[in-house]
Length: 305
Image (cartoon, rainbow, N blue to C red):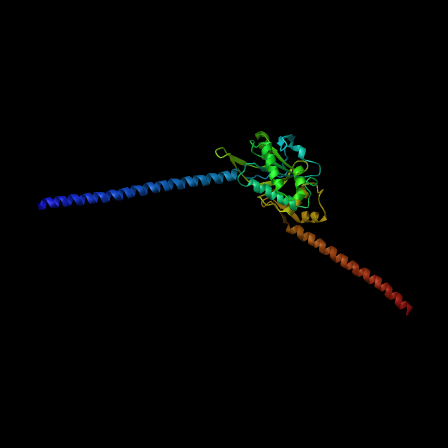
């Protein structure tokens, strides 16, 4: 009997050891599978991040200052009319040009609202001093969608600007070849994702001369009205300028890396020096004039005595 008990005890102990070993093995297997799954997810995330980084570079902006825009391209406006790009370029009036796609769930509406706010705050007059063209780079956008988007932005504008914006802010759609030709000319790049029907693209607006050459560009979604006016002045054969603008343009130059006008120290110092010389000359001249006038009166009074 004692042998039987010992045998049973050994069997039970072995069973417990096997069960414990099985649990440890199962736990180890689960940990291994979890680690593999975590590594796979991390690798997939790294691949996604890397792809997004590469796409962001490809979808950037390549500055082409002085580039000639293909004004002969054909588009369709928000009134369903076939037009040429040249129809919106007039003598003496520069053009603000921007690219969006009307179903954009991201940055495009902010580009348009930023531009709208700058237009409202600028002293330059839309339709008289410059025009604005918004081009969709999505060839599936239609004139009807363009009209709806234009109406939405105009509804958000101040009442005093609604009529002018309706007449001189032009929303265009086009076929892929025309779109690609125009975006390539200005250096605007984008990537299309068919699965989500979305685009990866940068945010910017462009300033073109009345003759259709690219003059300046502003990155981002906020555009300083003063900088924007100076860019229009520089691009528009100085038609909308005044003395103050001329001084600012003399002291500042456009920085393509920031999209802003910045002071040029040498020009500021030169202008400051000229100002000091002029002021000093005016002061000395007035002193000489005062001395001569009073010396004459003094001589006359002495003669009377």
